[in-house]
Image (cartoon, protein in one colour):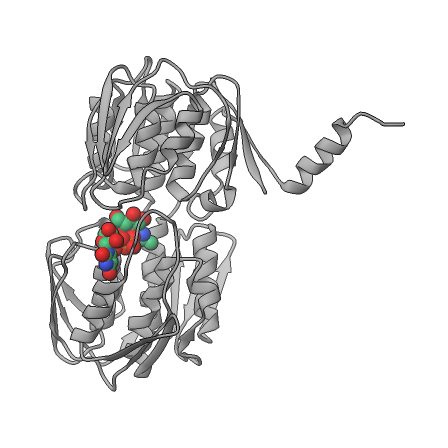
Length: 433
Ligand code: UD1
């Protein structure tokens, strides 16, 4: 098992640039299946989830090439295969969202039910109901969803919760439908707005993205296009927490001010000094953070993805903080690991009560999901002594060059592979006679 070895206690200082948005990228890659001709995406992060999505598109017989400079070429002129296999979809929930576009293009699609981070039940019922509303006939059997429809037709969709994934998926499927689709109680995340912009650049007619009602007027055909991905606001939030938790001073470049607002205001409440400019922000803090309460909500509320890193930060805050998690029921798994580092946190249902302690101590901890991993890395950066964070593969799903970026800010962090640790052990082992 590979791990991150972190020696805490160093103030982070310097400049770091944010990569392209993971969540935006995955949804846009699925939407690119609608276009005939080449789509070129810029600012694409080299992370595991993106590489998994590349494999998913290739498994559909679509040409998909990632170039090292963050450029991704997708040519879906031909979709040769209409089935997305379990082996790929179980690795990442977002890959389920190829169902709608493949169905819209080919009249048939078969996609395995998804996997992904273990943070709650995470059903796909909104996706399924929405695709049915667009006129498809669906069968769920043997762990697969099979969908059939000669041509999707517009319909009225109401989401019981403003799901980001369902909004992106249904908006995408509706772009090639016959007639008008309206999605009510739609998610308003910036990544939803970007998918709408991308679809419109391909020739679609989507209006209202960024509000709770989205209207999609279906068109007959879409074409490939060029598109630059938005910066990753979750990565920005993670680095902001890393700056505050180490009482550092970090300039975070490649951000969009409106996207970072919900968590910036919370950082300020927690005693950080945050200056936000057009495309960068400076985050500094020269004392322990202050306790503050957090309630996660769909955008523009506080993002659930940053609940875990903020939980790490508040574990060393002065005073008691309460976190209420409204989006996922199992997003407090990282708490037991923080407790191993000396945190004082009680979880009751969807609430965590955090009594801030003056310091954390280094320990061996395990990440159970992507953002839990980010939280544990932040905690380790602040903790006294050495920590080992296991479960690196979760962290690498969503953070590009995390170790290198933190090292450039002065952090004492290294990635150690299983082979390396074996070699270290062998070297360290006493010679027996
Ligand atoms: C996306 C993000 C994820 C983020 C989440 C919430 C991607 C790849 N991932 O996930 O990082 O944490 O938004 O901001 O973009 N739900 C249902 N039925 C459905 C769909 C969702 O009940 O069919 C529920 C979920 O269980 C959850 C809530 O709706 O409780 C929100 O989930 P959703 O917004 O869909 O999350 P994702 O799009 O999967």
